[in-house]
Image (cartoon, rainbow, N blue to C red; front, side, top):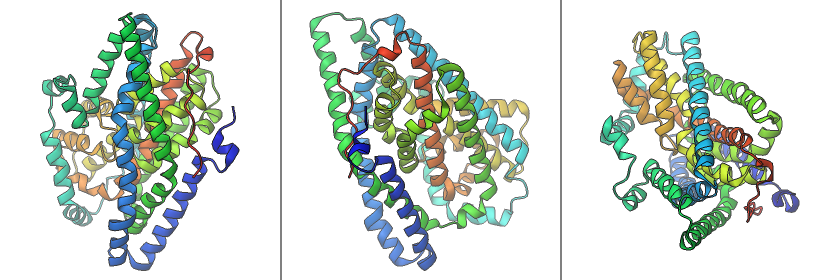
Length: 442
C-alpha cells in the first residue's frame, strides 16, 4: 500500500526534517547575532515560538489519555483469550527487563571507562549550580511530593480513575485500562461487545483528531529547535562535551547494536528495513522529547509501515510509552556516575548494582514527558551522597539529551512490538478492521 503522504506530496518525516533544519539554522543565527540574553530573542521565544510549540504539545497531551486508555483496552480485548494475553504480556515484560538491563550495563560501563566527570573545574561547577539553582529546586520539590516505597506501589492502583486522569497519572490510568480490558476479554455478552466497539470508536476518533494535529508538526518542530539553538547555541554543549558524548555513545550503542541484534535474532527482520519504516516516529520523538506525544505516530507506524497486528502493537506500544524507556535508563545511569565523579564520591560495585536496579525501575516508571527522568536522577543522587542540586549541571543540555533518549525510547517500543508480534501465531495475517489513515501533507 502506498503511503498517501508520499503519493500526494512530501512525506511528513521530510517536512519535519526541513522544519528541524530551518529552526536549528535560524536559532543559531539568532544566537550568533544577539546571543541568548538578547531582548528580541527573549521576546520571540516567549511570545511566538514558545507558545506555538506548547500549543502543539498541549493538543497532543489532551488526547493522550483517551488514546492510551482506548488503545490498551481494545488491544487486550482483541487478544481473544486470557492465554494469548498472558503470552504477549510475559514476552513484553521479559524483553523490557532484558533490554533495559543491557542499556544500563552499557551506560555504567562507558561512564566507568571514560569517566566524564573526573577533573571537572570546580569553579565552573559552582557557577553552573548557582545559575540553575531555582530550576533544580523546583525539580527536587516535585520529587519530594511523589510517593515512595510501598506508597508508590499502592499509588499505581487508582482509588478514583477520574482523579488519576485529571492528574495525568499515566501508570494509574494504564492499570485501570489493563483491568478493564481483562474484564472485557472475559465477559462474553452482547452489551460488552457493544461497549468494546464503542471504546474502539473512541480510539479511532482520537487517532483521527491526532492525525489532524500532526499536520502542524513541522511548524512546531521548527519552533522547538529555534528556541533551543537561539537561547543556548553551542556554548553549553561545548562545556559539557565529554558528558554529552558519553551519553550519546551509550545511546548510539544501544540503538545501532542492541536493537539490530534483537530484530535479527528474535524477529527475523532487517534492521535497515526497520529503521527506514520507523523514521517518522523517530523524528517525531526527537522533536517533541515525549514518548506520550509520539504514541499516536508510533501506533500508526507500527500498523501501516511495520505491518504489525493491531492487538499486539496497541498493547505493547501503550505499555511501552511508560514502561519501556531504555534511553531514559541509560541517561540516568551515565548522569548519576558523571555527577558522582564530579563531587568525588567513589561508588563500589555493589552501589553501582543498586543504581542499575533503580535505573531499570526508573525507566519503567518515569513519565513519558519532557524532562520526566530528572526527578529520578535527583532521588538516586540523594541516596549515594551526592548533592541533589548537582542536577543543575546538566539542565542546560538536558533538552538536547532528552530529545535523543526519547528517540531511543520510541525506537525501543517499536522494536519490542516487532519482537513480540513475531512470537504470535498467524501474526502476518492479522489485519486492522479499519486501518489508520496517515496524515495528509501540510
